[in-house]
Length: 385
Ligand SMILES: Cc1ncc(COP(=O)(O)O)c(C=O)c1O
Image 1 (cartoon, rainbow, N blue to C red):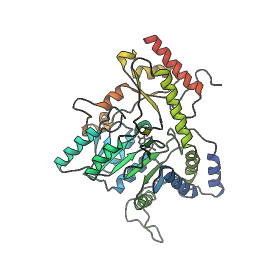
Image 2: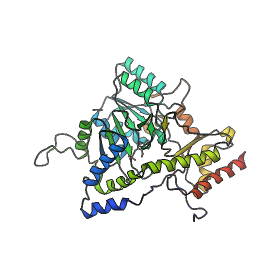
Image 3: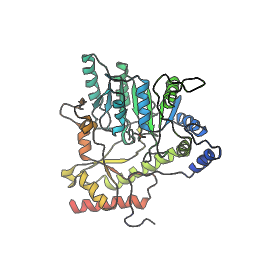
Image 4: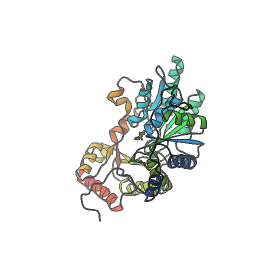
């Protein structure tokens, strides 16, 4: 029985019950290391699940992005284009490499990278004679970006694409798994993601050699010698065999988790979509979102309350809701960085930030908890409307 003011969290880890089996196996065999059968198994099983040739399990999604940039030889003086509406971890690895980010606005349908803005940025880059070394495209909240348009543009200029699919494991775009359409894809298994290893990530690609090179870099770049010899800088980025065991059990229930999150979205939609000033994030045609977080926009003039006040009022009821990501071009750390808007006077990501809210969406959330969120929002609207 859920107690009255028990906290409703945004997105909690949701164990399947099978995790312990893999963890016990690691303990029994004393594979308590950043390599071992669970790591190998998790890599193979994830690669099969999304349909790529190779995968390397690492300590975080951020590490996976960093390795992708290393493999593409991104360094000082290089530019990397990146979606602006995202978590800071999408772009921080650009700075780790001493390269320069250029932020690309969202478009209104998917909230993800605007092909219009990307095209303008590429045209300018051609004029300046310096093309970006890579484009990082984020699939936000499980929604796929418009990959056909983005890949068309990037292929035209021969620019590799890194898909930041940290939030979109289990989503599909025209039948293809999110994260498998670019040169590299990355997933995150952070505690709040659709499946988790408590902390971890995966780099995937159809280029087996590149993934082997990533594995080498992620394991301190040890040369094949009978002693510890290093010819280049490496990283300690491998995933532990214990955590990979959690990942294997979680991967077994990925489809169930996607279905649960989609049901959560539908339940919210059914009860709240008719409210004045509320618009839910849509789903692009011919795609399937994992609906990692249910997100919606609140038009203050119509709704009678802003996203910020709704988040605060829900918090008073011990319900955790959050703002949509603050665009990176608005972040103090990226002050002065180049940015391309969707239209001349259309800054879609800024609008989404101004109006957006993420509702509690954990796949383990009980229906009574979700009903409590809905009842709370309905009562707030009754007071305001
Ligand atoms: C869009 C996005 N990119 C990258 C990351 C980084 O993943 P991690 O926390 O595993 O480093 C996250 C989540 O944390 C994310 O939401």
